[in-house]
Length: 165
Image (cartoon, rainbow, N blue to C red):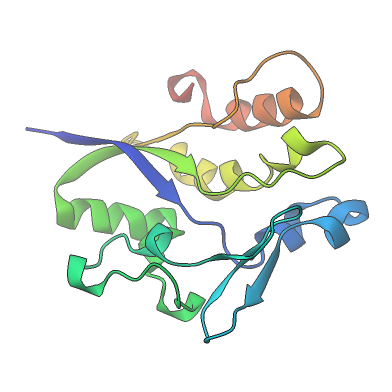
């Protein structure tokens, strides 16, 4: 029997937004911050408070190790952000394939839909191009119309081929 997980997530690495946002928007983009109490998390523009690392990075841990906050990036298992490490974790758990959703969707004033998409596909695209096809990357937002979001989605799909729609 092959198990397919229908709702998994990859976490963004702390440097993702600083590397992928256009330079003109980096000052207003998400920031990876250290929180009171020693944990780390994301300060998303427009949010009242940072979003701590917690349950979103507990994949591969035993239930009694779960924390809802107070997690530092150094404690995050590589399978939460690295596609090759995720495959190893999937093998250990008996999961043959997974549908992956991005973790965060920051909304910025300028080009908000594009900014919510930058970065996720490239980290997984190289692995997606090699068989066996075990990842299906899904977006939270539909690919409709034209403009920067649609252009970014078409660019990603060109690298993955039709099997990954």
